[in-house]
Length: 315
Length: 166
Image (cartoon, each protein chain N blue to C red):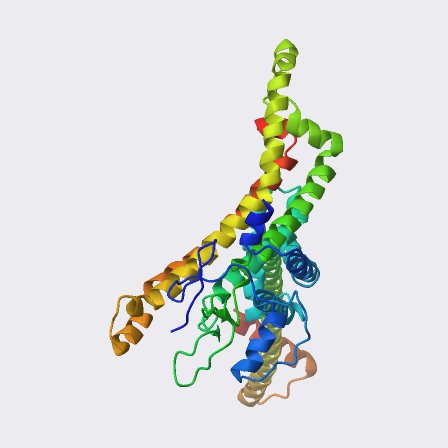
């Protein structure tokens, strides 16, 4: 079995079962590869090229290839792939339009659909056998080799070859930050800079007259709270997704090693490593879809909230 | 905050790498997937709308055509009725005319036949009278043994013919 290192400040221990949240770059893994006898890869020494970035690139290429194949020769009477892509895009467009409205939908849809598709495929990519489980660590069987990737205390640290990109905060935060940039652009282009400020700090609910001026200070304070809330959106979005996918991964691997941890005999531990995670695989399929939906849905709601004109709120 | 982010594995270089990947996916999907697909969906929607509109036009035209066909059929039926009536009237007139002509012709033939018969009868009667007269004259001449002159012959002949006519 693979050995996993503890994290969140937990001292590393050979029996602890959790992935390191900090991704390991290939330049740091190169000596291990060489020492492990697998053969030194010819990848350039790029500090940013981590296993999760590699998976993100694979997912990107897969999505782009499929959509390119489906949309290269589009016809009025669609083929199977074109039909699938059209169905997906039409469905997503309908959902986005239903939330943000007909006016904003054409500009908001590309990003929201990109987020949904990318997050969904990335989440499900993590469920492919081998992703997160094949990597560098302690020798566990006759075909495996020891890597010299150990921590300061000399314990083996498992470094997976592939990691789902949504289990990496860099990716989830990147998604959230790109969204926030587009959100800001949409808000300002829809309401104008002054309109956005009024939208945040101004009186709401159509109050008029003296009441409006009386409540001004309240709405201003509410606006400040709103700004703080907006500033926390990237973190809430990214940590929610990261937490769910990371927890799912950890859960699957914990279930996979549960038999061994409980002291089952070798053959039973191997069978249990297949049986125990199985129900959670189905759950993770749902969680993957759910998190993609939640992420893109929240983004759509944020756009809706910030692009709604004062008059529209009362309809 | 920085230590929290570090604990969670945030690295700005890796973060910007991921941002670039997200932007690439966003840009390429927008250009090569969402744009063409939404344009195709819009084209199909427009085509369906046009089809529906054309269907309405075709239906209206079909209605008009059906109405026209009905009118034409009604007109044709009326014309046919009129033609049949005219033909019947014409035939009746021809038949009547022909009948009249035939009757007239038959009457003429009958008249002619009757005239011919009458003339023939008269001729036969005249010849008979002449023969009878001659016979009476011969008989009178033989009985009387007298040679009758023309005057006697005429008188005897007239008397005999007069008696036959009675």
